[in-house]
Image (cartoon, rainbow, N blue to C red; front, side):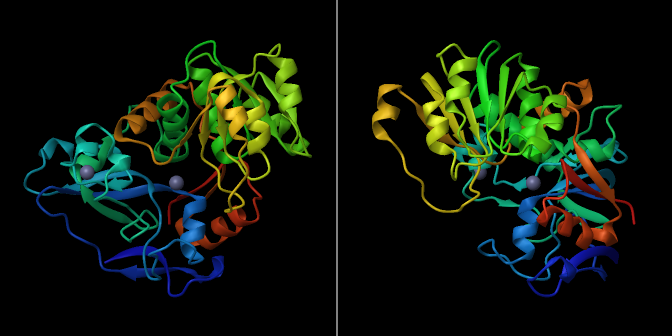
Length: 343
Ligand SMILES: [Zn+2]
Ligand SMILES: [Zn+2]
């Protein structure tokens, strides 16, 4: 048996409760990981509320997991027992064209740990050994838990999808959010120039501390004029759109010729308007981005271990206080991540 946090019915944060559940035993290609830290993602909040298709109550949430390998199946090199690892969050097939091309995030035959059970809000998790990625020495477990998401997600968007290069200008909307604050640092790690947009002057300090070169405070969501001025009428080469609803038109107007706009946000969860003329005239490329690949997580771990990206953690709470962690996330009362650690 093991301790875990789960929920009997969809609902508010209070449905989360610490219980005893059966502990799964590793199959021949699996490892058993004793979990030290698990990040709380907004995705978990949506799952608990029943807003993710295919979700079911009774599952153990959490896909941002760091811990130690404590047991392994017969096919696993015994030397890996005792290793500190983060768990790659997708259980992927490993044989399809996408997986073989290193794009485990696109695998049609994959699922995210936690969303369908077996997640991080527990004492142990059992996963295929190939999902266990070694944590570099000197990087602590709470920081490492952020490697999958939000740091890995930021690596995918900025360095993967947008292929951001030194000297390019990147515009980041919703820059004061958990994703934005890590995207700023990932962009600075390749010496890009960061223009950060936030709707709230309360966030200016944390956005600057994360390394933004310029901060545009736009409570009315009008920022393209300021971006035009800051770039000498050249525009931004890359836009990381964490908001989209109410900002997308301004983001397109902020674009340089042949800019890339990476769509990550879906705040309003409804269609938006698009000016095709502007997209054609400026040859703008619009692309979606999501989960990190395996390689992105390794890059994220390197950026965290080298200090290029500092994990932004607002609260560390023990696992039985998962309900409080969710409540903090829902009220957006926290800068950066909430991480569960210890019982
Ligand atoms: Zn996440
Ligand atoms: Zn696959």
